Length: 480
Image (cartoon, rainbow, N blue to C red; front, side, top):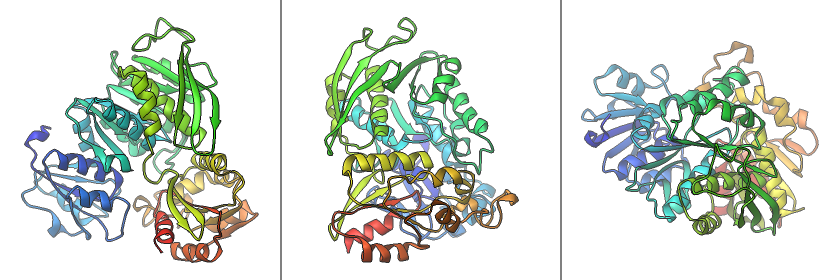
């Protein structure tokens, strides 16, 4: 598709993070972009307003512009569940899913895809920031608002396009990458991938598509990636790890409660096959690095950015400077402010692995301060399949609040697998009972906010955690 000939685009489900980042990017190219969604307020509302994208907060066939050149819709909806999607697919205007449209844009560029189960948003934004500040003029699309981007996207005049590439519904099949950063492979989205093998295969098939002259940056702290990366990728494989054998190794990790510090050295398992660009010698020290972002997982994200930056010929002093300057995307351990002297934090963690990493990071930063976590489970299928892992994920929390499960649009009105039961065969009450200890069931956002207003005290650390709309509780506490 020649997007230079596209003048008017309409987005169904425009408030979703994927369509927001794509919409902002297209609007910056001079395309007239509008769209529709529900009346609920989302974290993307501000981005859409700043981008000048008109949003109609109701789905109606009459919304579809007759003179649109293209209609793009979120796969959270289908012809069976959304009247606009049904009309678009039955009409004469060309219609694409979000992933198909992103693929049309991505595949015409020097596409760098950041993939993996966790850390995609942070790593994409971090690499994009480094490239932008280093003068590479990249195009970047991130699935969250990035304060240092003033939105979800960066628009540059180079051929580089860095995207956060989501594996759900195998959206990866739409993309032909020139380079890939593979963070981790950790079973998720059981409503689409029946088994762990099905989930893993999506990433394997994706890295097989990297051309011979491309490159893969791979996390060798992840045992699955260590097994599958080199044997399935015909391109150059660049590895990173913490205290493990890899091309880029972080060691000497320290934290002062404000920043993390670490050293990086270059070590190779196969020096002839995977030389870095520019060449480094075995055991060469790359020096000291510091980052604002908390948690060991963000040191791994930083290593991925360092490795990609060197492959892109960015000078080491720039990598060191801009790595430290990056302040992170929204909803990733984001400090919103204070309420009655308590620190209020918003975090997107919604998978057991992410929860454990977030809690470890909070303990590293805030020590023994009382930690209150309000967790909003995301999707019935994930809660059901990973139930026992969720139960074990909250060690180190002083007080835990669990809200009703956030059922996404894709699970309404019922899950396709009847064995999961009416509401997924799982409940937040079951989770509370199994976790035990100082765990409370508080069903709604309103009740959660009320409880925190009454019980949060000075010096507490209060974390609103989940991929749904629990961030609203934190915003309300800080505003009022």
